Amino acid sequence: MSDLEVLRLTDEDREGFARVRSMVYRGGQPTDPAENLLPPDGEGFVVRQDGQVAGALTALDMTASKGVEHLRCAGIAAVGVLPERRRGGVGKALMRGTHRLLRDQGFLAASLYAFREPFYRQFGYEVCGRVQRIACPADRLPRFERTLPVRQLRPDEFHLLRPVMELYCVVYAGGNRRNDAQWSRFLGGDRPKTVYAAGDPIEAYCVIDMSGDFWVDLFVREFVYTSRAGYEAILETFRGLAMNKNSITWLEPSDGPFFARHLDHPVRVELNKPIMFRILDVPGALAKLHPGASGEVVLRVVDPDFPENEGPWRVEFEYGHVAVSQTDEEPDFELEIGPFTQAFFGEPSLREMARLGFVAFDHPEKLVAADALLPPTPVVCWDTF
Image (cartoon, rainbow, N blue to C red; front, top):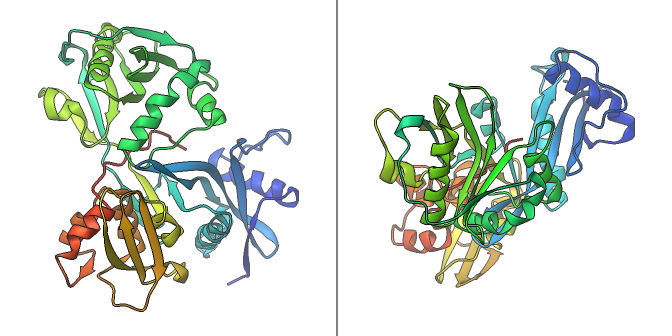
């Protein structure tokens, strides 16, 4: 195999970076030399083979929520290898080399949407969360008495939505605390989105790709709520928006209110395309936790790509504080990096992983302490990249 070298993108490799993007994502159409292929919150990485760029990806500087804390998380996007360089280990080298560089930069986690999950599973990624995609015929939307005012916002008023998203990210793990550029890109772009907000201060909002066509499906890009009244006010707004449509589709977390209280037989509920996460720095991520109880556990994480993640780690915790130290003690729990990542974010939880046989343990009573450290938490990330 030829020598493979993974590097951060520099001016020297921009032409090669652009060629990868052109061949993989633009059908071979050349890119404009003046076009900036990286967003302001992104960094490029390339893999060289025989001195030439053979593959590339983009890493967005994002976050992943976990309770009141947010972990610095790289959103991996536009992964590509030149067709003539495939099946030679280029993609594997690109992923593993980029992970190492990201960890050295202080990223605690990485996330992506996979073209096929098994490919990325070999690098330690696992599916986190079970987001529901709800497609509701217009005449089957539930009726509510609206108790909150609803108004339309301009896309540049995203600062009004931030407190709602911040609170939502405390309840649900995996959410991205968007910076200004990310909010602007999400709500704007070539076709600005339509935003409706309920309450003053806002208790819920939705972001919609509006269509002037009749008898089509209306898609809601984002639906965030912090109260029952806010949720019901937005659903009542859906009724008005869907009057001349066939149906309206939106996403909810696994514990969303619609499936629990409003399901009607013609409504289709299915799992949405999942996000995958990977913890890059195990002790750093554990130290970010804010548990609501006290206890201690010893964990060993099997991570072939990062031996420094394995431990074993003695994790002592009390309300709002975690101390992580390496130890020679026998671990209470042993699991691979993929299941650990799932257990860390909380869906599927550590207890679920143990029940399914993906966690090795000898002392069942330690599950109580482990649950306090890594409680079950629905996982939601509304950002796509």
